[in-house]
Amino acid sequence: MRCFASIAAGFVGALLLWATVPAAAQKVLNVGMAAADLGSLDPHRTATTPDKAIIGWMFNGLVRFKPGTMNPETIEPDLAQSWDTSADQLTWTFHLRKGVQCNNGYGELSADDVVFSLKRASDPKISSFSSDYADVTAIDAPDAATVRITFKRRPPSVLGILTNYQGGNIVCRKAVEKLGDDFRTKAVGTGPFAIESYTPNQSITLVANKNYFRGAPKIDRIVYRYIPSDATRDLAFTSGEIDLIYGRQDQTWAERMKSLPHTVVDVFGPGELSDINLNITKKPLDDLRVRQAIAYAVNRAELVKFKGPLTAREAVSIIPHDYLGTDEHAPLYPYDPAKAKQLLADAGYGNGLKLTMIQTSLPSMLNTMQIVQAQLKKVGIDLQLEVVDHPTFHAQIRKDLSMMVLYAAARLPVADVYLTQFFHSRSIVGAPTAVTNFSHCSVADQEIDGARQTTDVTKQKALWIEAQDKLTKEVCAVPLYEQLQVWAHRDKLNFGYKLDASLTLGPITNEQSTLQ
Image (cartoon, rainbow, N blue to C red; front, side, top):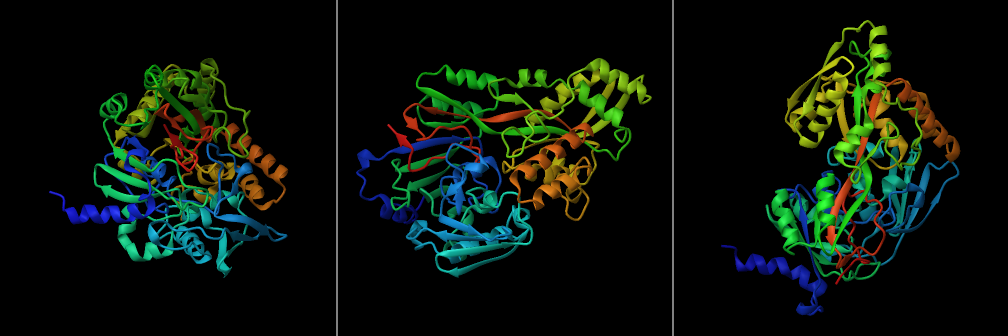
């Protein structure tokens, strides 16, 4: 039996924020998430979809993507009201808004909180995103309302790594230091909603921050329920228990939900791009003709038809649609099985060849490779899948044990991030600076580095496109499709903006959102 004292304690902070709202008038948003429990609310440590979705309601960055968008060229002020740059663009000075309050009674946000937060995000012992800040040489506070950041090399998107996304989320120092390990479940930011209570394996309840600097939220509380069963979560939605639901990324689910009364299905970016990375150092993949044959044998349209055109779209390049610098017309190899067979014959494999790869048992990824497996079979390539559980899959591919790697990802929407992590020699698995370069390709290092060094935006974009073209022609990876984010909500919920994209992988609920 739960102790009354603990219940009372859980409500104290909440009452301070919304005691003036009559109980009958409270607007409570009920959300259903496909997870068994919380991972962490610490924005510098977690990257899972269930955690990121709720973190987006609790934190701010120095700057932010406009709600409903992911365009780096339209980033706007958030905790910073303005900023200046040095002539060489290596020193950036941010001027903070005054009067911004940390949630749960932790006082006014100052430059010290921002410096502490960004240094924390840069620390590989703490942060999952420290590599994003590798070019930072100093972060300091000239005064209580000013933050200065100095770089040894200018990142392609300085503002991008300072947004309300992953390491750019600003935490409140006093809360981190006071709560210690409990910060995982009681994280404190400056966002429109604050933590009220957490019940393991059941739910998190957030309460509106009535002192939010952009204005008090119109929704009073959010109950974020963990419902791992798809069937149970769907039933909770259809019965009216929940108002906003994390959906399945498939056509059937989206169509069924669209047929329900008073229901809106949200399909939005970023698309998680699935690439098959080919290890060019392993025979027979060291032969360009074999890699080209694989590329010609893959039918992207068939994959999208299987996944469903409402929730998936064909890849256009080795990096996703709509990133700053994406080549939307990259020279991808078209589906041509006859050409694939001819290339295999030219390479000495006229009677076919056998390939193996380690493959995750995660259903959405396994069924993708089973379709590709059947497509390759048609041209004489016998692909054997060594199926393992998802954690084992990640461990083994990072040990360079698979000649082919299917990887699905979405990143900060700047071409450099994808190119650097997946295709630069510094990121080759096995290297001291390894990230996710499973192909061992390095043919575009010069263009990737050149784009990082130039301050000419036009030249930067041209170099990114040149890099994509080189890597595509070299068949370092075979792009397949992009899986979009899929949620649904009752029409009584209005987000308050047009939802085209959300880097938290879930709809942002903020001071603009309403619930009728």
